[in-house]
Image 1 (tube, rainbow, N blue to C red):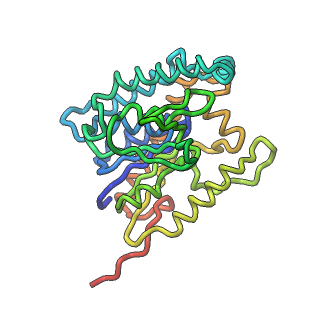
Image 2: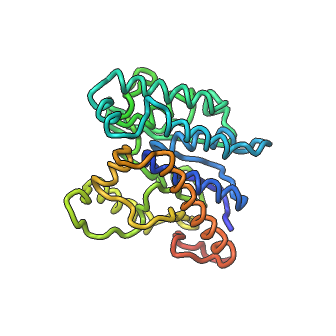
Image 3: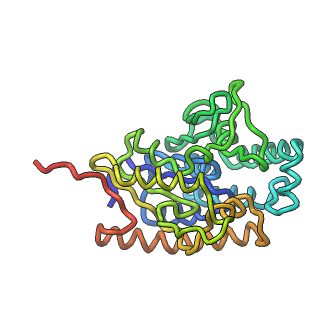
Length: 301
């Protein structure tokens, strides 16, 4: 089984991040607990609530994550539909209301007010507009940092922290495995909203193309192929086939589809829970899996 320090890496993905709740349930059920939680975009919101409850004596952690995420999916200012999305796109006031709605939800479900008060170490990333560079939040006020990490254009207004302007960190690093390795994690569980490590087919249509997505896939694959010595990375399965790409992925992330966000989220959670639970059972019994990557082994004595 895993050797520490253990990190959970939660990816961005808009409402597709519902997948990560199923993965967290399977990890918790298997008795796997993190020393470090990293979140990008929607994964920052889920990760912050989980990190707030991790390490506590009570067993309500996953309930809190579920309740918070369900409220995010169903709150009226954050509605996931074409009319609401288009209205937020053209209305700064609507985006500001959505941000304040999200702030209220996070403050209601997260007991900690600073990173230092969390049950386990947590960090989240954001794009700093002043320098167009990635910034990692890991200390100080918590909710403003999470709002900065999830400030997706056309959904939320940008967020100011200490006078600097931030946008959604998923634009730069939606699956921050590299940060986990930099911070010394030896075993990493990657909770993806979409299967970035899975070899994608050649685009069959223009709307399946995604230059930024393709670039990230190349970078992510290179990182997996060059892991530091003695590290172990588990790419948890999402339990769904034919995950979206290109414009279709953006449509899914922003919720521009006919499905109801909560019902679709429940299906994502269930599929990811079943697939991840099966993966963890198999891995614990055999120590082998096509979804586990390891760095070069340390030489023996």
